[in-house]
Length: 301
Image (cartoon, rainbow, N blue to C red; front, side, top):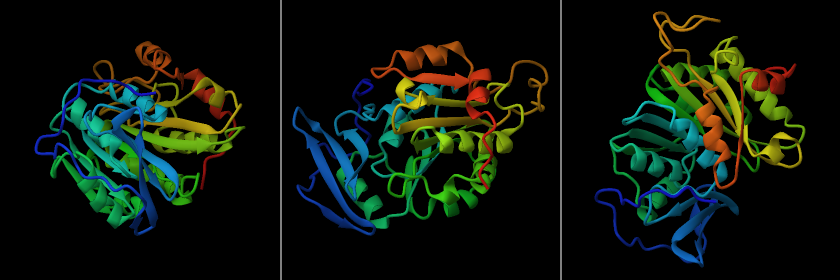
């Protein structure tokens, strides 16, 4: 289901982009746009047969994928105003369009391994122009390693090879690089697709806890979000993993010096309520709940 917001086209974007009717060759295979017969402005981008992005060409605030709606709910915890966001796995840039719609003036970088695809989505979709949204063809891990420390408010990982996250984007080195790329108080959002008993999601969270601090769960800096059926191990699905870099002055096991930490609290009841009221309700695991979910899972190498 979609999160609906006030339609607004990006400045300077074409009113009626010409879209191809059949498969188009890209560097990694083929891309195909599927139109929604009930909503002509809505299209789903399939990359090598896999749905990778869904957009409404008339409404940049449209998010169709449930896991992106869940990410948007977490982003709402951040203070108002523009954000600096790194998208690892850009595809059709649906979330980047949403961020610019909700927070005009944000500076974003989308990284995708397929250079031809980055060119095509510029032609097909009403994307914010550079420097508001820059697109780079590169390996996501290599791009992350090259980031200036503390450059971003948000890092989003949404990269897949078939139905799994590539190993080099799920282990200890990735978690450390993501932590380094974030400013104090910044947020990592990672899309983890997993099957029962969610061993990968548990191990990824254990890995993030190691990189983001041993007190991350207790301090409200570590969380998992998914539909209840996925968390209960009933089926394959997406789990959004969330980790927050400690605020300046925040010590391990303690709050920020001089008052509450200047960063999102993932244990905020408002976040849980917002997730439960989505069109497809989602459950938040934070604090003791996320610690129990991780249990004795070992961090990834």
